[in-house]
Image (cartoon, rainbow, N blue to C red; front, side):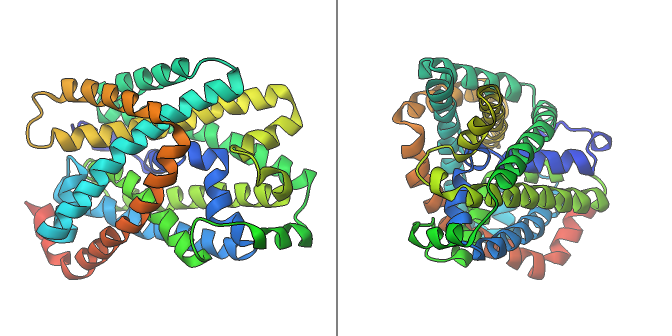
Length: 361
């Protein structure tokens, strides 16, 4: 599975892949940013700064531990950092979440086809399942290349729509006042930021761990984690202001960013719907790759059939619906991910010598 040539993975590709694993349907739609940051008014900016800092620190830790262990799957990093008992719990949480999030992304594609293209959800779910399957079958190189090509388009589109939304309707005191009646994803901005970083890193570890094992230089990993965190922070901040400046309208819609895009023109709305699909694709691919690499960690012989079977099973589960899967799955995994955070910190502080020894072998 770990088939990436070290010379082919530079800081920008690492950053793009990192961003791509996190910039899924929830991020690009604006719904996650509304729930986790905009709902807390000006304090949401502090939450974005905290989450971005955590993305850099823990993203770099995962990459470096993956490098030291020459990891081929995230389970190696989890077991090393969290030990046998807690490692098994975190491993189970991540594995279930990767499958659930894959199903959610496939369902999300179906929802976009219904709402934006006025077609049956089956077209979206089948297309997304097949695209993710064929990309992952190509191995880690295929995953990194596909995601790194999609990410620049995503960020440009998100920034364009966000800047339009901000200039069309600058943030006012009334907008801030309205946030006091919104129900955020957590009791306060600190827990919301921690939870947001947590469940996103639980997704990202599936790709970051084996990618770290494929990169030789620490500098590339450091810069990749830094640029990835900055890219995510800037993207979230742009969406935050755009959503906040149009809070009256977007607080009542499922996809805030598509609503703002519709204010520009129907053509821009349609184009952004396609961009949103690419965001779903980037996360679906990373989830499928991570899940399949975990299941086939011990024996790679049936990797192809496991990948096909996983895609089919996720397609079936996706029929439950996008909002149902996200509502119950994401927050629960976010809180479970706190244990993973603690394990990473412990390994980083108290197992540094062991990491050095592993790399030298």
